Amino acid sequence: MKFSIVTLGCKVNSYESNVVRDIFLNAGYIEESNNVDVVIINTCTVTDTADSKSLKVIRQQIRKNPNSVIVVIFTFLILFHISFLILQKLCSINYKFKPYM
Image (tube, rainbow, N blue to C red):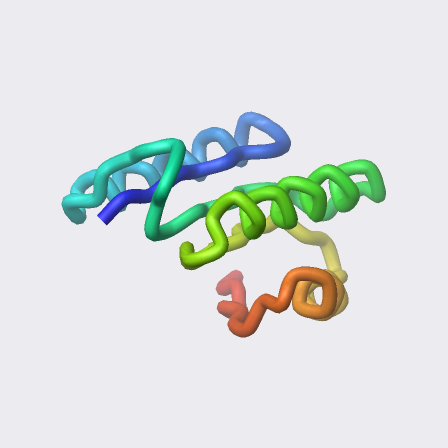
């Protein structure tokens, strides 16, 4: 299976994306940029600007990869549930995973 990762945000997001990349590669996935089975978007929702950029990238990836599983990993403050509801409405996202702290 093929996957791609799109990273927006800070150095922590880059580090997390590299960890996710290693997990997928160790599981036998192949990293590609087109015609992938899974798209992982690692971003944050800390500012309005980040929200706008993130939603734009999510929509672009959904259009570019209509048959792919889209996974969104995002950093949040207190608005985790609200952020998910916004994404769910705008992008037809069906599942969320609760963070552990």
